[in-house]
Amino acid sequence: MTHPDEALALIARQEVDLLPEDPDEVPLHGALGRVLARDLYARVDQPPFDKSAMDGFAWGGKPADFLRIVRTLPAGTVTDRPLAPGECARIMTGAPLPPGADRVQRVEWTEEADGRVRFTKAESADNVIRRGENQKAGDLLLGRRLLRPADIGILASSGYDRVPVQRKPVVGILSTGDELRTSGEPLEPGTIYDSNGPQLAAQAAAAGCEVLFYGRFPDLPEPLEAAVRTALSECDLVLLSGGVSMGDFDYVPEVLARCGVEKIFHNLAMKPGKPTFLGRRENVFVLGLPGNPVSTFVNFEILGKAVLARLRGLPPDVPAVRARLAAGISRRDAERVEFLPARYSGGEIRVLRYSGSSMLSVLSGANALIRLEIGQKSREPGEDIDARLL
Ligand code: AMP
Ligand code: MG
Image (cartoon, rainbow, N blue to C red; front, side):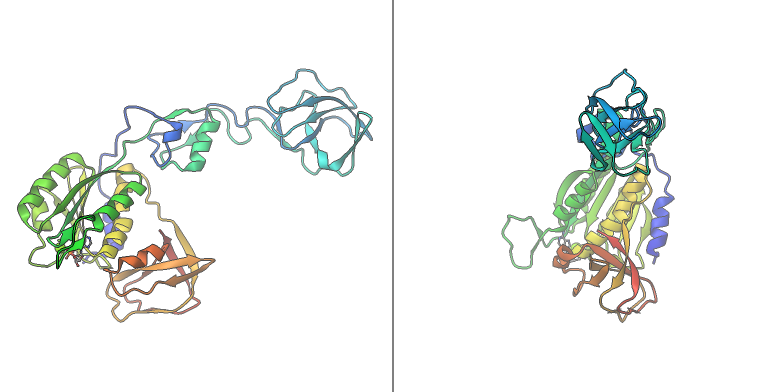
């Protein structure tokens, strides 16, 4: 059995052709969740001029009892007329400083009378944001990364209206199992609805992928093989749910081998997810996930996302928190690394009670996964532990 950390290291070490840049740049408003294809540089100084950080009075020179207010400077206007000694300009936040001024007195700390202003309290800062203080034109603005809302703001602030992005990873999904029916169909005795297909499609879409759902397949090698061959020719990552264990009808590993998929690992010291398979054919990865819905979810979260990060050329992004255990955890069998659905809130974390990896409903209340190491049978209430946020 491969340790999950070794599995992640194997994924990180894969030699791959990174996903190529899309031939067309995308408009900025469509770039959220896309991966920036290459480094972008600042097009303008940020801010582009010395600007006031306050509503107040711009002035310079020696302090005086009163300053004469000679003009008003709203944001968005410039003036060439310098301030003379004893003069100041009423200035709004964001307006460029006029010549002759090098600081701003906030309006709250002033008194005005007869066109003059008196300062009632001394400022400890100049309240000016200097040209290029945040960023200079030509500085690296953003490197390759998954674009988040703040990145969109940064790109806009530098005048980018279109951005070069990587092609989205194409993720193919196949659900295997004779017992599966599609939601909307009637359930005959012994059948269940395919929840992994829609769930994996949603997980992949949420991870910024383009999703191709190939459907559900009976536990027979031939139809599965044909679909896997198609998926291998159309996708960057193929996800199969079910059929990777030791059952009599678990054909997935055999079918993948026939399709030329080479194994990277099969069987992990991980719970849920012991029978998980990862392989590749050329630049296409195939993740065979155990059919139990919690396993499928957790394994995509941990391993599927790691493969996507590799294809994108990004470091795996694992949002984590350290939190206090609200209640103790114990388990009888500690032979595998275990991931437990948990609820994190206000610095505390609590494992959600669940009876096994078929219990999908537990996930709707989970916002984190707690990890127990091999050999670790219990954790005490009040202990600080690391958790992975979902
Ligand atoms: P398997 O990995 O094929 O042995 O399946 C393990 C368990 O997960 C069985 O109880 C299956 O019925 C169930 N299962 C398999 N595939 C799915 C699916 N697509 N949706 C929901 N449950 C599934
Ligand atoms: Mg099955």
